[in-house]
Length: 394
Figure 1 (tube, helix red, strand yellow):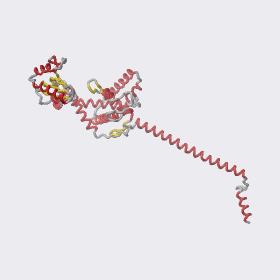
Figure 2 (cartoon, rainbow, N blue to C red):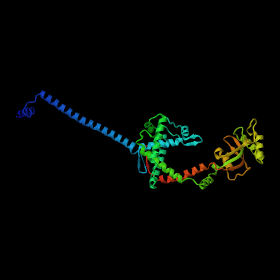
Figure 3 (cartoon, helix red, strand yellow):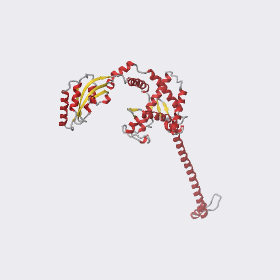
């Protein structure tokens, strides 16, 4: 019975649902079909996963492009709660940078010359160059300046609106601006489109910077109105001069130099003794002149004439520090004589004070300084509480 039951069980397991007996070949075919079904399921899953990955990449690309577009056209930084697009920021970056570069540094030297001396190369990318003084890139340096300018001009726009400033020349100012751009582009051999990018940034076009230019022109017009009302009065000029006499006073004096052979103590002491002996012989300006001729080194012709030792209308910028402190002192009176040591040049200056005066030739400069001081104080009050966010862009 047990054997019969076992055979029956085996026979039943070899039957299909319709009663067909499964041969060895049938089982191989069935196994292959199951494998094909499994592979088909894996293909479907792979396609779904691949489609998901591609969709994810596309979404990421769209997000990146959207963020880039948003940065360029909507928010690169924020100032006082307002978004500043990269287009607008780049415009201020280039405008403030060019203004700084053209600013006079000393005499005929411009800030561009000074920046070049510090290693800045206008032919290279600002982001790839380091400012040796700040340790930051030159891009960061100019970007900080641009941010300051943006704050100033946004404050001017808001102040203009609050004060009811009527900007009636906007269209004419913009027409003049576009003509200047067109003329400059023509002179440089560039198209207007290329000149906009060169002057205001890689994303700039005449169309997309127009509203920012109009704001900039309005701020300039309001700034002009403000500064007209801040023009320095005569009393303010005099007050400023009185506070900065040492900067503007001009001195007439005579000078004779006694140089030691070297900087050793012994040689310096000998030179000092000669200087003291010289001073002891001075009784008036004429005697100083004669002593210069008498003590001049062999072959030195500088002191042959009476004008050899004379220095006229010299301001503090043309004097050594030790010399200027003595000559510009309020205690100085005509005929004063002294000896000033210069250790770096191992010499002694013998000075004879004639007079100190101010001829008013720097009144215009003083008036400009007074105006700048008043304007700076006004703008500081408008901008000191402004909140900014650069989003770590510089």
